[in-house]
Length: 203
Image (cartoon, rainbow, N blue to C red):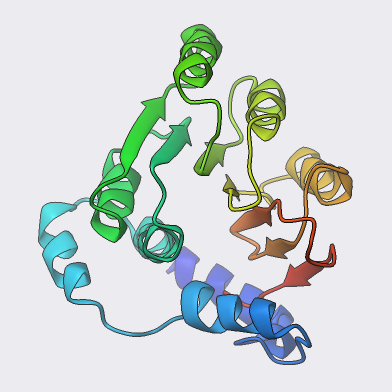
């Protein structure tokens, strides 16, 4: 019940940003329309509903987004930082069966694992980051190892004032390119050939 009420409030506040309405960039419109807010009932969803169980509607919604992101990017490497579930990994793998998903815990050993990972993989294709632990240091290090095709997902950007301020810092960071504010998470691209802009999306 709480989820439905909260979801309705967010949806109403962002109603004018639905499905790419008012977005002038053809590329950004397509990404919003066919990745972020794609409603096509992928066959894999049914399979994953049985494989990944015990998660709430909010987590399932994010999982399906991550499936579509992986399907869109076809990454070789996905870094999943601070996740308390293997559900995200399952959906990333379903979206791109050949990708390697590396889960990293938000504890003291996490940064060491990231450093070791970057020695073997100098470029990060996709990263999903929970704002836990030393997330600032983690994101900063990962952003120094991106390409034009890299994509980062920052989860729970509206959790509190600190995470909102951090999201705004990432938008303004000279290393980032186009960003998408989905309320429940933020998506960052790094292609500086595209005009830097932040899009608010009713997700």
